[in-house]
Image 1 (cartoon, rainbow, N blue to C red):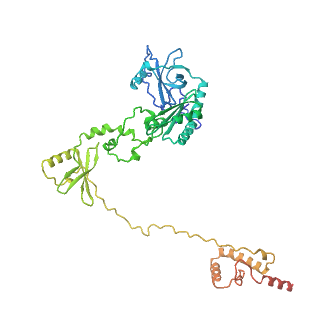
Image 2: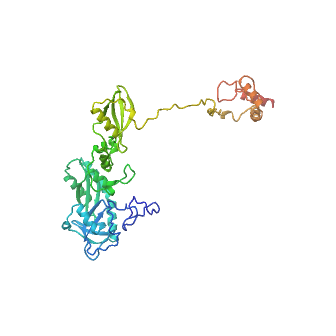
Image 3: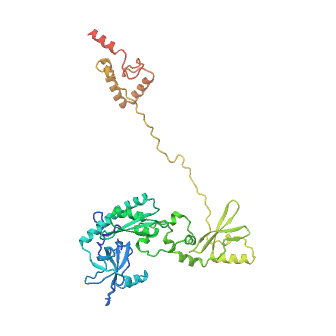
Length: 451
């Protein structure tokens, strides 16, 4: 049961995975995993924690259950747990003292846990679970069609069946509240299970579906990110990013969560930059700030003229602070180029060489026109002139002579234009094409009379 993203142990084009034995080397067989660092230490807990964390559908949903009885489950075991409407099948993702910390993080009270583990799942339980997982995609497609027929402004993103196939949870996204009472009646009549509708946000939907981000890695929301903090366009402005909605948005259609990762570093670096440093008045004109390199501590100014922008001057943060103090004191500033840090290299004229006649390009090969072959007249095949046969034989001989002797070929071309050529049949008397000579019948009659 390796996940599709697992690349360890591929055989016959199919991923091997860890076969649900506790996680593979890449850690991708179960999403939203928590690293159990206590299990790597040689420490035995005298008083083990009785609650465990169980994940359903490869980590898309997690819950806490009691681990009591004789058959105590450990991390990696597939177990059958009790629910309010039957039983479900999941995998133990975390056990021990780290479960207590996870419950504290998610603000779950230990006394509120009512259900526990029934037993470890057998082969029959796994078969029923696989049947339920195969049925989810078909159910989602049919559910979307029913919602469309009812003209409901909602999108069904995922469907999850319970392990015993008695209950189905439909996860949907919508801009506002949706009256789905009529929709539930159609679902119950169509699928014959207990229906539960659960509204989620766009980020939660992308976390359940999964995918790859623009960085090439799997989405953070579906692998490790559990808290979704609000992201504003101010985070992009502080990092000097272009406000391009298509590049700043993730697969969920909202601003990328990774915009907040380096925001604190940018804010700390911006504290040393001077405020109100957008313009500096000089004798040559007003220099306007056009760009800032935050981590290098450079500010780039350019003289703004009426029709064009002047040359760009780079200054450090200390130099800009000093210039602002001089400007505030009323001192005149002559030119900023005297204080420039990064000097621009003037465009050097590139030398070139006249290569006319040096490089010879191959001549274009002219397409030879296929000459139309004259179709023989089938009416005159039976009564052909023997004189013409001799002429045809002579013509074939002259063609072989053309290949060997170049001088004779030139003479034959002249004969084609103006002279008479004895090797070719005389078709000039015939004014129409695709027909033989006119006197074929007469010549045959004369030959008969001679005989």
